[in-house]
Length: 347
Image (cartoon, helix red, strand yellow):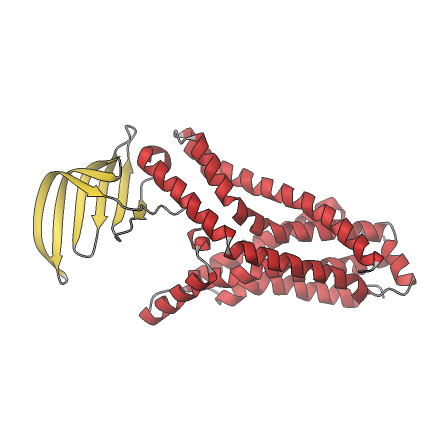
């Protein structure tokens, strides 16, 4: 490793660490404002919210790593250009490719780190976060349930909640299995069971109703209640996503959301390579004049990636564009622009 490599690693690494902390704090603040603050307002246990955030942290790190890398790269290379250090490197016979090489090496490290976290700690953390919410739902349904919530237990029973009341009870409840449907005007969680009152039980034989009976009170034991937090597909590993895509495809079901998530498992950490090209390209392109990105320009270019990936994800999940394009499209765009700027930049 040359002294130039050590210098660039140290400079970029310092900025990336700081940017990573800032981006994670921004994502946490967004989660608190949009999702968790209303839960606290309705009486959710702050300890539960804290545990949920802790288990979500690996996912936030994976999401923040590429953004932090782009942010740090743009800041560092913008400063190197303003201080004429890039001009000095060119005058000393060090070409653009030699400056780009250590950044691609660092991108490779971040790619391996991000992919490893996405395949190990992220699924485990999200599953534990789901478990925390599952237990909290049973204890305080009013805090964590909203009208229209659906969840499922280990026996495959789907529970639909149509109304959440202030006294902790729920209303317009449906419990659905392949053999029967339970409809109840109200219910409540007691221990590990769902107690239903004033309801209707419909059993099925083949595809037709077989019996219809009313009941005043019924108890449905719930085992491993599944309550998915936002972004539930991310708690699946690559192998699980591939299996689900094959299963849905063979059965004729829509699998675009699963396929998009599968591609994004690779696309998000791979964005570091595109960002290395883009940042170095921008720096050498601006080197010929008195132009400078500035902090605002760096922030805009960094979070523009976040906006494009969000739009691409939605379009991919809905099948508007191919899943691979939804996942890798923003990466390809930044890489292409970076190559063009690197080509046009000062030699």
